[in-house]
Length: 503
Image (cartoon, rainbow, N blue to C red; front, top):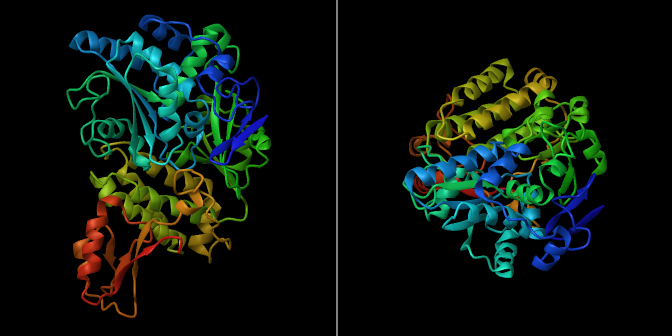
């Protein structure tokens, strides 16, 4: 059955509905409707919640899949050791393009998310609960309304974050809620040791919105009934965001864990095309045959050569150039970095340029340069963004090896780039959102090859053997905006200008 509105994804349910129960009747479930569909919530103490999470094998649904019971126990231990109250954070930011499951939950079933977060907060005797949402997300209005509807004894804050790829990283979210710039910290600190309130802040339990919603379902069903669906190792249901080529809206599918991906694609009215990206832009490409049989679970995707991540599924149709699509994303990953460490400031922009040179026909040497740069950033960053970006590049080279040969040995694959892979977070105005990213352009009728731009912004410009600038085709990273403006303003020939992508 399906249900949807103009500003949220369509919903499809395969098997018994749990997270999506009631969404065939209600566009958005207020508190009374929520209780009518799901029933009252039993009361749990902290040890009982740890036991429940362990028995159902609950792992984080934001992509990292860290065991929830271990995270909860770490906060309990930290509160006792430090003699401080706890805090609870719901990570409902969804800055990764291609994902929409958390937006759907916030827009249509916000009380299910709160039903997981509030009992945890009460069991921990937490000082507060904070919900991080993206600017422009349905949660900006739906979540405050849900808070007002239930009148919780715990203070609940809804905090807007920039809709950027790295803003949903746990450290970046903590920084944003603390009133700092929402970027990953240079020094990794576990939120259970120091979260809300600064470096020496409160022991903080931080998990994804769907994780809390799954906990709320399990709290009502009990462990045995929850485990009745899905495989023994990963029971329950999963939420998948399926991005269909040419469709204005993605589909959020709730299916029993382990459901073959081919069946999910069939239910969404699409197929695997020439391959399917699973797990998002820190994920991997599966060839069409592997994608059809891949089970939708963490272990199943791993055994099939992919990764589950946050449940993002993007098929590539046969009529688009897969390497051109991947190049657009590598450019976006370079632009969306925090710019706080060497791999992000220099490595990822260089990797994006090298990937573009390969797609343009740079030969075998260009392929080796891409491989070299991808290897160079791994394990060197302050967060996982460089590693995930390098993994995406390596997966594209492997999955589309024949296309790599076509681009480096011949005149290319002959297909245009349809821009199937989204570059901005989903929303009702995504078509507008694709426009508005600033790029740099060179007026070659004016450029005299002074080379000053490469001195001012070496991350954006390199010089060819004649001394003329080679400018990055991708959007200007936020952290390089001032350098880009200086390069434009100080160009002696007035040959540089800003342009808005998509126009």
